[in-house]
Length: 431
View 1 (tube, helix red, strand yellow):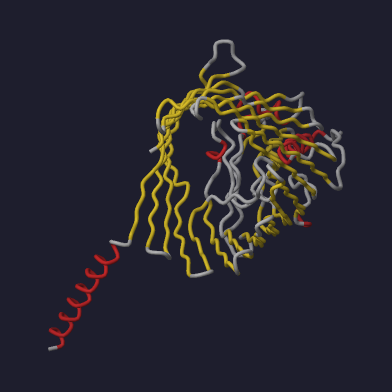
View 2 (cartoon, helix red, strand yellow):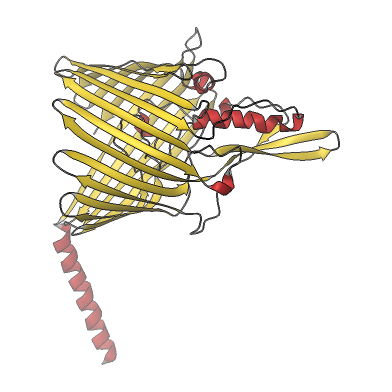
């Protein structure tokens, strides 16, 4: 009798599950989209226009929605590219998360790309998820790397929102180590990530105030910096032979930030500010000095013409000039300190940057000319990236352009221009 009752119960549950699944299927919505692109990049420093980067890529984006409470998203990228003389095949799960909304409460769990800030270029509070800066990316958004996050928020009324982020695992920016010119007695070692523990995890909180006249956000971050430093260890092989191990070193920071946006007649104005404070017990040469930054931006459209201008100022407290050490054993640390200041952008006590972009749409928005330009008044570095976008057909785009980095000797752009300078052509089909 017990077996009969158990069998009936199982059949009842199974039938009920089928009935519910049939009912629920009708409320599910699914969407598959993405793009396929192919690009070739020519070396701007070579008269023969050597093709230093060839890329073929497929992006698949999957969205699923469950009634009004559940949402899931995944972005899978397949890439085959030839970079100088090396060939790579990558399969990258850029994002995969599930989003649950219960009234005013929302939680998103999984691998996510989460940009913070309202500025277009100088995003001072964009410190949650990292970027890949090793290769050439025609679209800057392709540089972004997903990271596992617990992302929760609560909406209070129509104009007040509190968002909390927990970063259980540290993922740093991927840096172009190949541009460093190191002596033969220096060996690069892979970065050792901080031990996975709650004490080494990161957290952030943001408060949004949204009104019909302006938007304001205040944020706080306590986590390992996405931008690791460069460090070394000396290895004494014999009384007369010394080698160095060169590696990336994680360091922890606190960032207090705010951003705001509002409209003034036909102009859109945006502001961002931040105060970055490294941990006191980590104040060594691979850790930057505390710094204050401010970004002011405005943009406007004049019919088919769009203009964007941003100004960024950075102040580095406790700034001191570097001097080459007399002790030859310290030369390696000195050189890495130079690289650290370049990548942390702390080569001067005050640094002033400006970015401008002019875009013009022609022929019923089927032909676009875009000219972005940036200039560092403190270091005399500049970057110009003219580009043309041509709509060959619906969802079929041809892009032609160039990247031109220029900097004086011993500047960051002087270091990066052999890697990034060049001309490119890309075909992209979106579906």
